[in-house]
Image 1 (tube, one colour):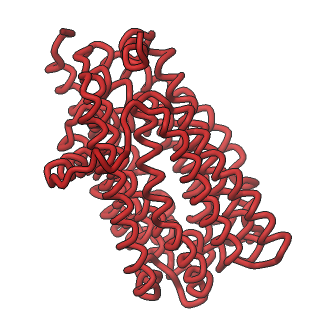
Image 2 (cartoon, helix red, strand yellow):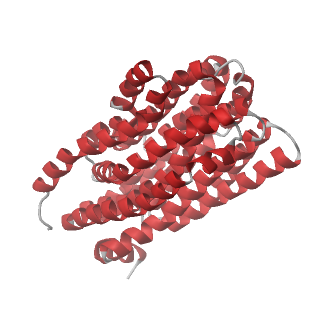
Image 3 (cartoon, helix red, strand yellow):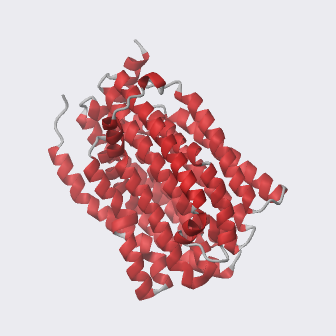
Length: 446
């Protein structure tokens, strides 16, 4: 039995709980370690002052833009690659993998050049104040230099996951994140380089992570090679269509950060710093639900391609229930220890006061997130881009943006603190009809 047959049997015959946990655990670890890096970055930069901490929140919006493009190509190529392999079409899978690589690298170069040229207006657009700008500019220039590594890594990472090799993706991502934390401590605490040390640490670790992921990718069934490159715009459009939900989700995430930072401006740097800390902590917890959901993605796409539809349904229910229980436990812990958690990153009375309220409300809404994540992941993985795109636009876009604008004007700072929690609850509720209608129409196994 060759490797393709072994992989096919693994994805279509392994019991659903065992398969999803096996694929989801490495992804969850990868995301947790990545978010631990984000928290560590905030912690070390927080030693430099409140304005420097605010700068991490501003540049987080820039990183969301880069991740939006990277995940669009990564998820878009990965879903098609997985379905093609499930149908036994290896050469076609390699063509899409190669197109995803070329597209992500080219886009990264364009974004890097434009970002460097227009760095000042970009920082103010993302919510910087005059006192935050010097820190944000320095940090952002380093992030822009790392743009090619960040985007191409998304392609390698997602194709590895969609081919059922999440452990290899985990090795690449966690290695870079651990290196980043070590370099943060070395540059900021050891060499006293200030915020430029955090930026250099991030850029170096991103390129190291890319190198490791490229090595891990050699174990994939699909191949990225010049001989598989096709000057076919239809390939590109299919990747973009498949990755559009990720672009919308991550892109609106960047817009939401920009709007959030601008809404916090009237309350000084402390509000921007506090909401930046809460966003990083909640993203850390959110990564648990997202990691399990991404473990479900290759199961859904591969079995959908193999016409094992019952496994798509079973995987959805298992992922939803497991993610809710796990995320609920973490949410309770974060609520109880909200004050010391915020204070750990910035020992500022105003930052702690603002951050604790926001964190408690967002912890409550975390219980609703696994359901919306499962819906989004399922529709994207099986090629239902319209439904996935609509669902992707809810959390950070259609709900959050009008909510924070209205709430901040009606209730001021408190409205800002509760906006994301309200958006999360509404997003989950609106996913219900999508799930019910789709499962009623899901055919039987062939």
